[in-house]
Length: 387
Image 1: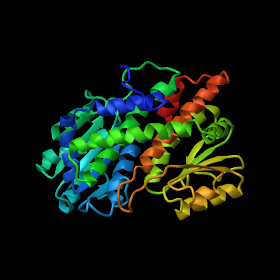
Image 2: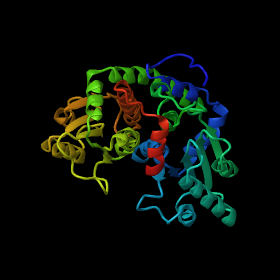
Image 3: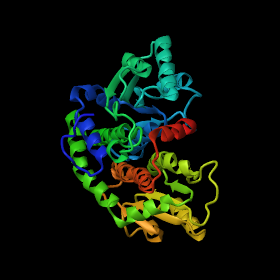
Image 4: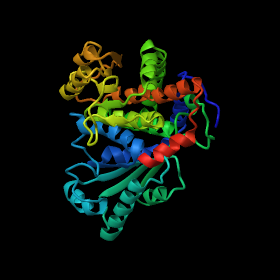
């Protein structure tokens, strides 16, 4: 792995994410950026954290009230998706929209679900000679079958991830498994949506990335080094289940965090749940809950906090203001302030993902201090059987 150019954070993989993003070629990003800008409808494809990253970024388009020219964002899991697969849905999508972009985020390019979506759409385009569709892919693997399919019908952007680093216990330097790609693609896609909102050229995407990293590095460090973060690692070290919750974009972010926390907590025999999931049990005394809400006034999220507190659970909230109802009711609060008008894209959710990402890393390091080293092949095994 190449040496980093300069440090913006004491968390090593954050510096490498910055280098990977800023080393992208403008001319390589431009075609995908223009396709995203001109699309009337964006269909999101991916798997696991890569999909949640994409959904979180694209949800800012879906929720924005001005500047998007009625851009619609869909996933195959949406109740209103007009078909049981991409091939079946394509005809109805073509009837409704002039320009449809199938946008896929996949670090390895080997995940089954996005590959099937791309294959189905490619077959429809070839069968029907359809001209309304384009595909886009953000990936680290330019030699995958998925890359080949998308290249024939759209544009591929190569975003380096961890590369060929050998398994290591230095998780603060390399992240856990796909951290570098998944977090890097999240920030890239968020800045692309914000640049489109501001009507910037593709160079503006990179200016926004540079600007954000100057804020994000100190934000991560100040939280990771805080007493609150130490208390959180203390709580996670205990034998207890973890619950995470949020609505809308926040739900995509907590799912990203939940996957990584389970890779570590599962080693202890503990479980990690998403609030109000199909198999989510009632919490027990001593369990730990992480809730995310920019306003801190989202009623279902406040209700989850109230229930958890009544059952003697411990609650961490991440909010955009410290004086919100949720922040006041929580045992611990992390405030990520952001001045943004209603209806504009927010960076709060992306920042939350970055601030939460060192939690499983610090937990693995705590176990190592206790003499319990957690090798990455164990984490890989938990990943393989849960995704």
